[in-house]
Image (tube, rainbow, N blue to C red; front, side, top):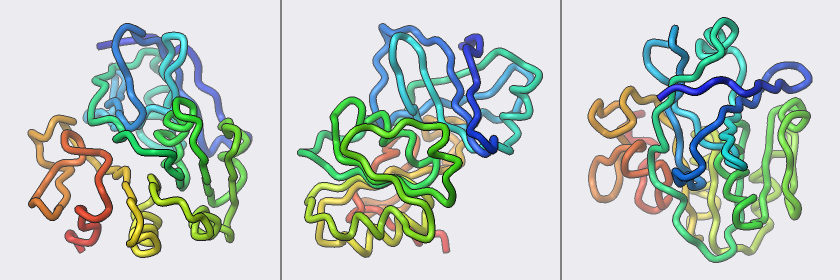
Length: 226
């Protein structure tokens, strides 16, 4: 499917941008789901991006600058998209949300829908010059990380999304909690056919695109490819 780019909004130092385009509001989009995006001119393989927001028929995506997709957006004002793909974040009672970098996207969408407590960390402040922070949320800039703050929380249910190193640390830190991880992986099809986003679990190999992207931390092995 195709849509016109409605707007692109950059952070102060242009390290991140928000991409907006209209989408049929009758089609349900849930926090945790993602779309594969490209332009008519490229990249050759569409890139997966979690939904940052969906309101009044407009989809928003949070994207790190510098990729091939952004280069094509400079000359094309149309989006070729496929989605929504993947599964919604499972229902949990009052979870704590922990985000790192552009891993903030699905948790921002979830927090807006569910009014959850959110902790988001970034390497610098440029991300926070762009995104909005929901009420009852905390944001941190390195050297203080989101996990440095989150470790003091007694909350039982936790959802985390961010770099794999952060997720591995969260899995160790909250090994006795009900922790869910939203995984990010390269993929070609978004439906499990290409097998590019395989992840090992306690039930064998699963795929981030069709079985995830949210998994229980207790079931998923983050180190199996190392």
